[in-house]
Length: 409
Image 1: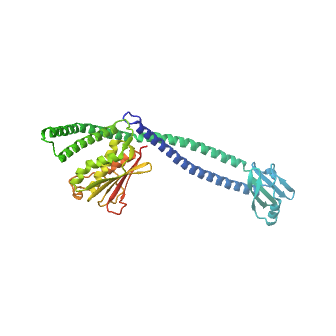
Image 2: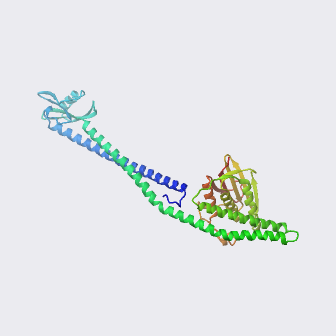
């Protein structure tokens, strides 16, 4: 959990995950214990009720003298010798009217009576010319229930704590393979980015030499179009170097703080860089929206996301691609619209390798891996933003993908 190859933010996230799962497991165990405890209490209460009923029936059918009452039971006996009661009989007992009724009818009667210990059930019956009225003192059964409740609460508390601690421990062990996979991914990104830096540096150097040779060897200077393409080649090489640097920073065990970025200028740079590809595919690439919009982001990451959006739109467009920047409250929206076939019927648009196109269906020689929009979604999530895709709101065919990021204050 605390290996040096993980960042502090990642370790905090793993600890939060372990604590969250521990808490959820503890709550789940608590819910199970509550259900089990309620079932146990219900069974015990019903058992006590049946046992009390049996004891009252036995007392009414067997007792001839109130002094023979068993412990915890109140008894009143009416015989030819008179009325006798057991010790501690509540003020509400005996119920003489009920005893007279039973003496006349000879049938057992169940009633209730208020006492200091609560309302109790009373059974009045007759046998051998004697009328017996019996009620059980609920104090002992309630004390038993109280002890059972305390025991269940103690067991539940201990079980919940142990379950939570066990879940945290198991979660930490379970995420170790995830940490190892994350470290492996980071090493791969770092190695690949580092290895690509050498040929990219050579490419940039050759482009710079080409620019110098054109300036010195070309009589009155190269044509403007040629010079523009060479300048674009230099800018693209510099942008690719920045992307590799960003990948290396992402693979490093350090965090890159977001800074205010002029989103309008960055989007314009991306549109200018993509014009050559758009012209080659006979796509009209235009830029619109607010002139000033600043976001809080990593410049290189934001450039990668916008580039992926524009590249995806050009791939799908039939004739036009519109890139707009707008401000909505404390959010900046970068919307890229195309006039292509629209959105595919899938809910995995922003997942990696979700592309359903190939060279035969896309009309070019490139293989499509479905990485671009997934990269945009990751950049948006890292910067506290979001990305969404929908049909165009102007009624024209095509799709609109919107990247939403927090505005810089």
